[in-house]
Length: 211
Image (spheres, rainbow, N blue to C red):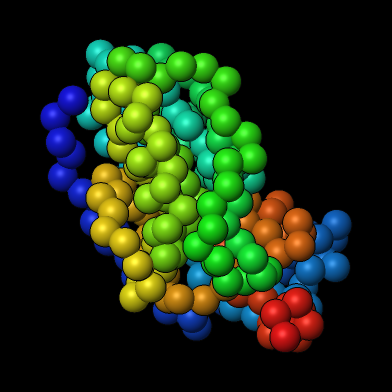
């Protein structure tokens, strides 16, 4: 596969850019937990549509396999796939690299491996967020040993200024500050994944977990 030019995000989010939305009645329990909204639902969906169209163009006529990194990427992967207008298949991996609740340990474990062989396939890894890059770097090295025809990455978000290893992320939708975020698949203590936006938590919500 031809090497893609990295898709640079056209939007850099600041902490105070988006007002806190009014949550639906069944989500009001989260209202006091969210401090700021970094990415609104509309921003996310607009950008996903744009990137889905680009992936459709880049992979036309190729045997495309989306590999979602569980658990955080499952919401993003579902929405993205509906904007990729090509025959494609799905598979999933689960990895762990978090020692504390909000800080990566750098130690990576594969908790769930792929169900199918990827040799000769065009593989697009779907990530929710890239911070240090250690987990993704390990995952890509592992997948390359399986001899895919090509191996690329689409990431919803990348934190700025914290990358510890070089990474070539072909499709990166948003740059965000180096803050702990939840929503749209991302969690704290397995909560907040079902928020339609990406935001930060009030410090008192997670203070005890990282003290």
